[in-house]
Amino acid sequence: MIEAEQLSQSIATNWDQITLHLGNDRETFESQLTPLLRRLEGTHGPDQAAVIRSILELFQKFDVAYKRLIEAINCFSKGAGMPAGAVKMDRYTRVPVCYGTDRSVEYRHGSGLISYGCERGELSVGFAEVSIPDDHRMGEIEKPRLWKLQFREDPQKNVVLLGVEPLSIDAFAARVQGALNWSSNKEVLLFVHGYNVGFADAVCRAAQIAYDLHFEGLPALYSWPSEGSLPKYIVDETNVAWSRPRFAIFLGLLREKMGAEGIHIIAHSMGNRLIAATRTMETTDLC
Image 1 (spheres, rainbow, N blue to C red):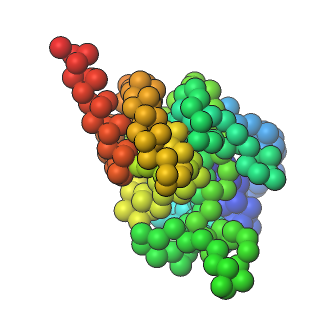
Image 2 (image 1 turned 30 degrees about the vertical axis):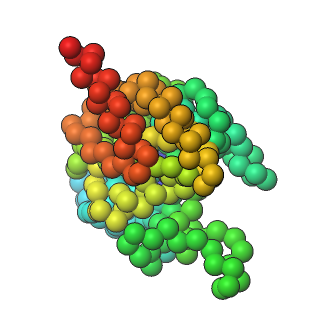
């Protein structure tokens, strides 16, 4: 999927080369492109996807300019072997992760940004973004090191949860469908975490796994309300069992409404209980 920032940055950084091939059509092209770029900045979800399509359709009227734009986008997104929607930034890659969770809503301390806690909540869906640094080591979740006097997360050096965007079911479906439609691999890699894991760590792990596997489809996460505490094993056991109906709903959304041609599930530790129980529920429903 071509993301808004990926498209706008590719146009901005290659504008001279793009307009070089327009000749006498440059003025007409600019007059049509300018309002579309303005709309791109102020829209989200399905409306933003529609604007992106309009911009690409405009470029397609000018073969050489369109070819230059696609080359720029491919360079910007780091080419093949990247998750759907991943965007190459300066010294790191932004990896989108679609998520479902039945954790309670909370706000990240001191930032005002939304996240999810350890209490039980309603089923929520949305997209998160995670940074993977260029010097990332396979299997690692790079974090700041106090002994290196690193006191803040740096996307160029660390795997960082950059943001969380909750969506309605309809907006979520449109975003997932758009990502899969633009991707060469119309499949989903779904990660289900285990015991003693918070939401932010789960999202980062989902992105890291997809990145390390060079998975070209869409990374996804289901995060059940683990307490994120070593002594709370028994509590996590009851919470993972409680999550079964909502996980089944989320899995059904991905399979039936999002257009995914396949779903690959990776479950860690106690997360396997959620997968096994859901398979049992589905088998019972079919009987």
